[in-house]
Amino acid sequence: MARNHITTTINGDEYEFLCDTEQTLLDCLRDELFLTGTKEGCASGDCGACNVMLDGQLVCSCLVLGVEADGKSMETIEGMAHGEELHPLQQKFLELNGLQCGICTPGILIAAKALLERDPDPTETEIRYWLAGNLCRCTGYDKVVRSVQAAAEEMRKG
Amino acid sequence: MEFMPEFRTARPTTVAEAVAIRAAEPGSRFLAGGTDLIPNIRRGIVAPPTVIDLAGIAEMRAIESLDGGLRIGAAVTLAELANHERVRTAYVGLKQAAGGIAASTHRQVGTVGGNLCLDTRCVFYNQSEWWRRANDYCLKSKGDVCYVAPKGSHCFAAFSGDLAPAFMVLGAEVEIASKSGVRIVPLTEIYQDDGIDYLLLKPDEMIAAVRVPAPSDGFRTGYAKSHVRSAIDFPLAGVAVGLRREDEAITDLRVALTGTNSMPLAVEGTEGLTGGPPNEAMLQGLDALIAKQIQPMNSTFSPPGYRRRVVAKLTRSLILNLYRDG
Image 1 (cartoon, rainbow over the protein chains, first blue to last red):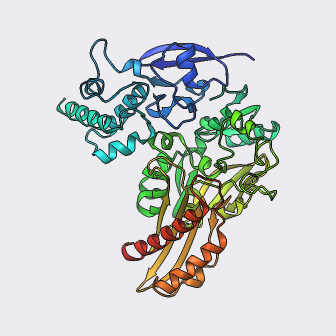
Image 2 (image 1 turned 180 degrees about the vertical axis):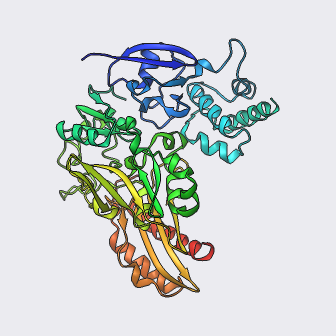
Image 3 (image 1 turned 30 degrees about the vertical axis):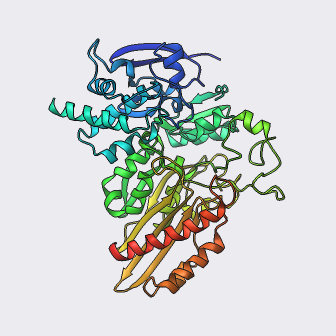
């Protein structure tokens, strides 16, 4: 079957790739573009490890087909830091131990960034509900929530 | 988790084009948010040769005013519905149902039409291909035994969509598109209590939009559900209530349920309970109506007895809250 030619913008850069129709966006990112920062956890939309932003919306990239990304723009974890300069969320996750094994972290960071862009000052409950689609088996979530709160505070200071 | 099987995609830009493709390609499936279909394809539960991507159909993505009510396109996302100004103010039960589905990520892509057509669920069905093969498959997919009720020949997978009951108490209708045009039917008429054939849509038919009548004075709605993890899970049981209070009396009462049967259930006979306040006699009458009409089975990890108790309890508290506070 002919492969599909896809043109997208990822983290501000133009990308073109070929993919099979049945390849998910996650598979395309990892296997065709070698952007392996986005992780596969469950591949069924339960865990959120594969979260990316697609045209400004937070999605599980395992539930999106690669062909659906044609002409759209994406943000992935690779675009979060500016060179050596970490995003405040990344910095606070490091400082406050918001991660242990790290597999869920790219998805959590992308989801948390999406939350703070909508609401720079979320309550703890809002953070917990927003991140409910991101499963973590190490941290028990408390340090994740504290890291997001600390980053939000830092970002509000500007 | 298995690899995806091969399939083609079609990218129609109009409803007419979408249903024409569906009619021409047997076994094809409509794809909107993908939160239900994609995991099911990956698990080998369905294997459509063609997937019809509805994302490019602008006419299905709008919420418009219609005769004082709303016309909601089937591809409107759950987040768009829950955050819509009129829905938030005039259709509170609908807002509560839409805003409580799955987690935020899924609400941003999952759609109204997808939730209304959500595949029925069961612990013997929503499993990987190797799991189901090792168990000799089940009645709903490739097998001939229902492990929930092995002596019968009926599938008891549970309907778990949250929107359907919330729409039902509002008296919503659906626009069903097919090659022969559009027909409009009450939402309650597109379901039947069969875990396999739960939708009474013909193979080439598609829900294009939902019509919600104008809110009537004093009619209050609410939605509540029970689930294992409150921010992400499918409902073990969900309840939508609509009622009107005049002085001390309830003069209109509608109850619809999800998670208890293979279809969303508009509880019958509630009009016989109106005319007075929600006292213990009235609530016991309602308990009896519900107990008689629901049929939760061992299709989830929570036993049927628990779901029976919880659905009665949720209904009572929702009615009392709406009665007291609006």
